Structures are given as C-alpha cells and as structure tokens.
Length: 635
Image (cartoon, rainbow, N blue to C red; front, side, top):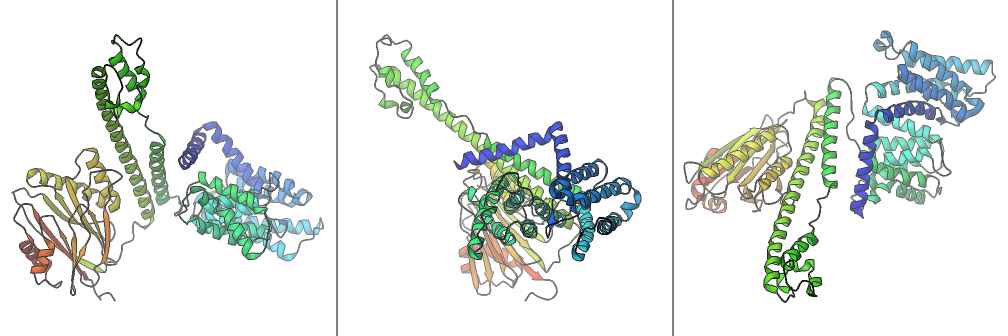
C-alpha cells in the first residue's frame, strides 16, 4: 500500500509538470493566477474592515500583470464587502494607474520607495474623502493602519515580485493566508486553513508560523492557530513509520492545541487535514531562498538542475522491470519434450507440468522422464540466467538512481554555497602529513595522497589495490585519482565513495581496492574517518594508542547492500592519526615501539612501517597526520 501511494503521488507531480509545460494551460494559469490573486487579496481584513493589501500587490507589479491584478481587486472588493468595498475599488484603480503610469518609468527604479509612498498618500486622501463627503465612520487607528499597510504591502510585494527574497516570501505567504481566511468555497472548508495546512508540512518554519499568525489576525477561530502551525511543523519533523502520518500533522496539532487550551472548534480540521494531504504534492521545506540577480540566477539554475536529477531518480524508481514469464519457459519445455512424443495425445501427465518443476526438475512425474527432465534442466539453467540478468539490470538501475541523487545533492550544495563564495573560513590549525611506503614489487599497489578540499577541509586518502604488482598499482591509482577529482569538486565524501562503489560494482571489480579517507576540518580540528574495506586506523595520544574502525567488506560488491563506515574524532590537542594499509601490523608495531605524539610525523611513519611490516607478502604503507594550532592554541 505504501508503494502504491508514493507512486500515485509521483504520478500526480508528473501530471502537474506536464500541465505547466502546456502553453495554453500556462497562459490560462497566468491569467487566473494574477487576476485571482488580486481578487482574493481584496478579501483580507483586520478588525473586520477591508485593508489595501491588494493595492500594494498592484503597485508591486508592472504592465499586463498589474492590469490583471487591478481588475481582479476591483471585482473582489464589492464581492467581499458589498457597498463597503467601494473604497477598495478606488484603492485598486489608483494603484493600477500608479503601476501603469509610474511603475515602468526610470525614476521608479532609482527611487524604489516612490510607489509605496504614493500608495500611502492616495490611501490617506481616499480615506479623508470618504470620511468628509460620504460620512464614513472610521476610527483613527484604523485610518492610520490602512495608510501604513498600503505602503508596507507595496514594499513587500515589490520585493517578492522582483528579488524573491526568502524573508519576503515567508511574509507574503502569511499575508496570503490572511486573505484566504475569508474564503470558504464549501461549508466547513476555508481556503485559509487549506493553505496553512500546506505550509505546515511543506513550508519553512517561519512561513508556517506566519500562516498561523495570519489566521489569528483574520479572527476566523478562537483556536490559537499560530501555536497549531508551529506544533504541526515540529510534528512533521518526527520520522513517522507511515508517510500519511507526516501529512496529517496539522490536523493532529490542532486537536492537541484544542485539548491543551480547552477551546474546541472543529471548523479548522477539514482544511488542515486536506491541506496537509495536498502538501504531499508540494516541494519539501525549502531551506534557502531563490534570489535573482547574478548570484540568484545561478542559484535558481542549480536548484532546477537538482530538481531534474531528483525527478529522474524518482522516475527510475517508479518504472519496474517486467517479471520473468515462467509460464512461457514451461510452455517451451512442453513443446520440446512432448511435441514429438508418441503418447502426447493420450498422456495425462502433461497437466502436471507446473512452474514449480523449474526449481526441482527431478520431481517431474512422466513415463518418459528421459526426455522431460533434460529439458527441464535446460530450462532451469535458462531461468537462472534470466534471473541473473534481471538482477544485473536492477543493479544498473540502482547505481544510476544513486548517481542522480548524488548529483542532485551536489547541485543543491553548490547553490547553498554560492552566496558565500567570496567568504573564506578562518583557519585555526595547520596540518602536518607524512607517509612511508614499501612495496613487494616495483609497482606499489598502495596509493596515498593528501590534498585540500573546499573551504577549510583537508583530505588524506589511502587506496590499497588488492594484491601486489602492476595490476594492484593501477587499481589504487585509478581509485585515488577518481576520488580526488570528486572531492576537489566539492562532492561530499559519502557521495564520492558511493560513486566509486557503483562503478566497481557495475564493472564487476568488487574487492579490487580498499579505501581509507580522513577528512580534517582545519577550522574546528575535527576529523571524520571513512573506511571501506580498509584496515583499522589508530589515534596516538599521550595516554596511549586507540584503535579506530574495524575491517569491513571492500567496495564493489553491491550497490545497495554495502556501505562505508564513519568514525569521528578530535585532533585539537595534538592527537596523531595513523592510517595503515593491510600490509602493516599496526597493533604489533605500536606494542613494540615507544611512540609519542610529539615526534615528527615522518619519524613516526618510518618507525611504524619498520616494526609493523610482516613477511613482505603485501605492500605496506603508513600515513601519519597531526594538527598544529595557528596562533593561540584552542581552549
């Protein structure tokens, strides 16, 4: 059931994307989107009175967009407020004139506050006219609130429509929920609750909190909706066993808040539950905003590329390989064994040929078993080959899906780091690295390299090609070179190692190489040790030596069933990390040696190699690394 639900959701997302790519649907969607936005925003109210929020939205747009928004707002104010909406019609008309006459002028670009100030001015003048000539009774605080909201909403929506700042997006979403709170297409189903439910499961935390605040300001229920949406967000972070429990979080949060506060109002529940379900079709909680401009455009493109990669991985997961037709194989056996049999017309044993005989040919019951059983054995071999081929295709697909997911995560990481590309991390440590190696043959199968990564990251990589000689040396060098390229490009170590594992698996070179990778942060002094088939490492301190990691199967045995191990440690206080290949007996060397972490790394590596090398049956390599503080030592 879980697989079918997730498949249905992926198909729904694919259908929505196809609709978006249709030019006619896009044109209709744009018209309805802009016109409907102006219409719905005119229904926003504070204290039971209409507010000029739609005016700010019109001022933030230009050209035909402003026209559609203005027309939608001019229709919306009378629809929501009746005769009391006439002032809103004047607001919308004034905003439309400002957008068409001033919004496209060069002066408005150089003075971004021109339209907000003019919007506030027209709101103030309109309010005075309605109070003096039409005898409208408006409290002073409401009058000044409308003036302030006209200007502030124009600033907000200008920022949203032009710069796509993440904070402005969150605030706009809260304003949208405030407006939708007044719309109920069906009894008991408010669009404000629906939108809040979507933001509660798929939006960022500030957006969810502001959506709850919008419902509270709209005064559509006495239940504290800000608390409901905040609780819903944190409920959604719990790793529930079933996916529907995540999307039901807004409804459950509302029930919990009502139970705690003692305020019972079931009207929000249908919208919150349905909104949470619709949140399954929305992107999951964006953590970074999409800004435009030179950096923002690159961010958007990287994020779109990441979405394409992730969607492709989803499509590959959705498409299942056709099953093996055992009945067709059995029918071929029946034709070969029984087709030329003299008793085929009167034989009653033909009905006993079932697909289970392909697994146990000797169970066949036939008067002429000498003809049937060999054919069943031949079919059994064919079935095994087909099953192996199908399994191989599954491995290929899993590897391809893995690479698409890795690339998606890599592109998202690039997008997140792009605004900080000019920043440099302050280094607190410098690294000392030394390696000693001794090969059985001239071509050493161990390959040890040290290099800088992104920001303040430094890598020490030890690849041990299995065996000795030229073949092992080529395996170690190829694996080390590939990993270095990916790590220098910014791939996370987990993804780089997973890519190497997929490559070795698909090429049938499982166990060709082992990997020992140390990732050291020169700003914090912390290290992570990634091991995949490598020998245990050692951390040498003044109190003695401690073993790090255990022996595991090498990479290349399976795409999904084999993983690296990760160990974390601190090198802030002069600890020495020792990486060893299989040809070194690290425990014996440390037991026979009187080593201290204060000795130079080169001397440590040479002594460990000398005393830990065995009978010379394998290549031996020792890499030693240590951090030294830059300036004042760490506390």
